[in-house]
Length: 454
Image (tube, rainbow, N blue to C red):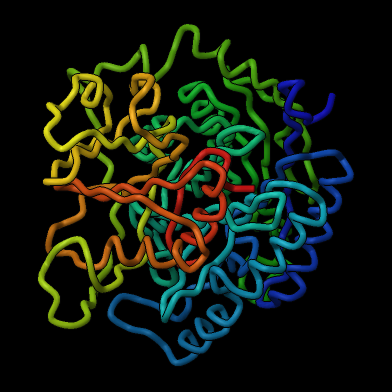
């Protein structure tokens, strides 16, 4: 079997290996070598474990006890901090170049450095080398909270790729039922569970997730030996500190590859995408098996910034200063911008869809609506794709539109915008949409849009 899209089959690989702890250049080289190995096995998607770049120094306590820190622990944290990577930055450029060289999608666990804080993150790269998504672990576990900060709801993307919809969930986040539900609602098909959990309970966990979400689960775990850590950090009779257990699970909970313990390996499995539909025949947890009249979930996608700066004396509204980053979600379908005579009544077709905007001035009646609703003979320009800012944008937050339209304009792409009480919408011609998405991502925004990642 191959991973060509017409066959409906995806070949996926999960990597079980250890990084070179406290040596990021060596780790990046090992990542490149393992990516090449997976590519030789014809994998189209390659998944690496949690904290593969930056490392997971199991057993280190960083000199912390209740109410006390030691100078040695501070220096140990400095060393760990130096091993972390900026996102984006030189390390992500190198990882992306490897994805491009081999034409694969990559999901890689990293320790991300932002300001003075470290985050446990999962990065998704496209086969063109672009960084498609960066998501931060929402809740570090136990001692991890000493060295890692917590992510927020702005980094929960599911990326639509030619292989399927890819999402990443990190280690014990997989025990958070509401987070899993949010991923299912996003339509995740290739659920990447990156971890360092090697316990007997882990494989039943990911099998349950596959069965619950009716998705493929690709679970990649580190394989870390005592010899990989500085001496004195673990029992002398314990060879494997993290023994692996990586596996690939089908959407009915069946094991397709693994689990494998006590060795470094690259596991490969062929995934029949038709199995996703077959599995949802009798269970769709966010569809026909849901009860929204009884249970509902609300996800806050807004970035949780501790400090917001505004520039100048501008009045509150949707139009000056620069809040970063924003998450944008594509509104499916194509839209048209229409011009009607100024005295026209608002036609019923203009308000028939789920998303529309009507503006009346002395000169015209302007309508934005789904293009299939526009009658023949109407003065209209169609072929627009649409994105919206995720979540509710407070009216007092300034600079939202400016932070979106400015980078798109610098890229030479035309844009049509309209606002509602809660949020803002951008329309870009379909043929220029990938350029606009690239410009928005380069400006630090996150864009979840179909067919815009490559």
